[in-house]
Length: 121
Image (cartoon, rainbow, N blue to C red):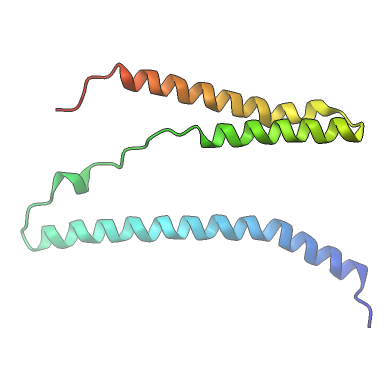
């Protein structure tokens, strides 16, 4: 029994578009659950009349990282090399590469701005 080509194409499209959506849904669900548990903890403390520690009320600090910029820069270089080798327009690799450069510049600016801030008291 042979599988019809339309079924193979439909399955491929569903997997290629559905898998990223599933990953995003899982990440969003995890963040929602973590946020809900955090709020329930604060609510339980308040219901018992206990003081709520200020650490629970503070927003988590985000530490900038160069990882995304480095990954995009490497992806851009790899795509450019691949397309050049295939005789195709290699400049397509500049899109993710320059996005990576922009993220690295932004990261460096954030580091300098954080260095000039006053330390917390």
